[in-house]
Image (cartoon, rainbow, N blue to C red; front, side, top):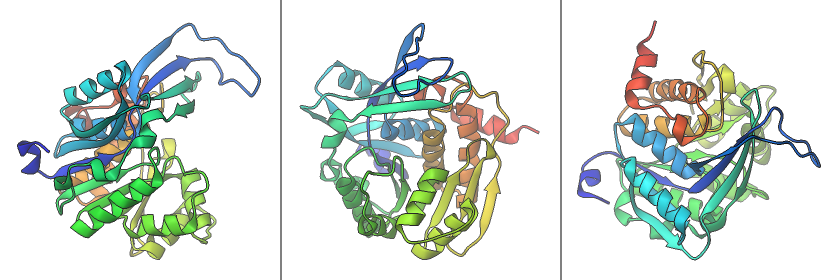
Length: 316
C-alpha cells in the first residue's frame, strides 16, 4: 500500500479483472440462434475492477485492488488502466493463466446477456494482498467472480481486524452451500443483491417472504447485517438489522446500457461508507451514480465522477 493510501480511509476490493468484448444487437439471441452485430468494442471490466473504478471516481477514500491477471497483453493493459484511475494495484498478482474475458451482448432496450471466461481470476488469493489493507478504517468489497474460499478468508480476516465488509453476492456461486453462506454473512456488514440473488440467498438460508422487502428484512434480522436489494429502474431497497425498510428511487435517465449499473452502485456505496457517510446517505449517493451509469455503453466507460454525482443529487 502506498504511504498516501495508508493515511486515508481505504476501499479494498478483492475481486475479478476482465476485458469485455461488447456487441450491440436488436435482440439477444435465443439458444441455437445467430444474430449479427456491425461491430464490437473491447473494454475493461470484471466486477472487482469495475467496483474499484467506481469507488475511485466517487472520491472520498483511497482504493486498492487485489486479484489476478494473466502474463499477457490484456493483463498489462488492465493493470495500466487501473493505475490510471488512481487505484493501487500493488496487490494485483500476475499468473500463468490468461486474463479473464467477458462476452457481452446488449439489446435495443439496454438489457444484456454475459458469458465470462474466468481465466486468471481463479488464481486470486486473499493471502497475496498487502496485510496493511486489513484494518479498522477499511471497507472490504467482495463479489463472486473469484474463488469463494478466498473471499471467505478475506472477509473473516477483515472482520477480525475491525473493518467493514460489503458482499455483492453476484453471481451466486454454483453449488453454494448453506454453511458457506452462513460464514460469509457472519463476516458481512452489508449484503448487496439484486432480486434474483436475494431470493437465492433467502432460500438457501431457509427464510421465506412474499416480497423483496420481506426477504431483505428476514436476512438482515437473521444475520444482524444491512441488506440492500437493487431493483433496476425502481431504485434500491434498504433493510437494516433492526428491521427498518427504506426505498430509494432511481434517477430518471435515458437508458442505453445497464451493464455496469450494479457495480457502480457497489463501488460508490463502499466509497461513501469509507468516507464516513451513514448507510442511507451512502446508498442514496450510490443509486444516483448507478442511474447515471446507464446513460452510456460499457461498464467502466459509463461510470460517473464525483462532480457528476454531486450535481445529480443537488438538481431540483
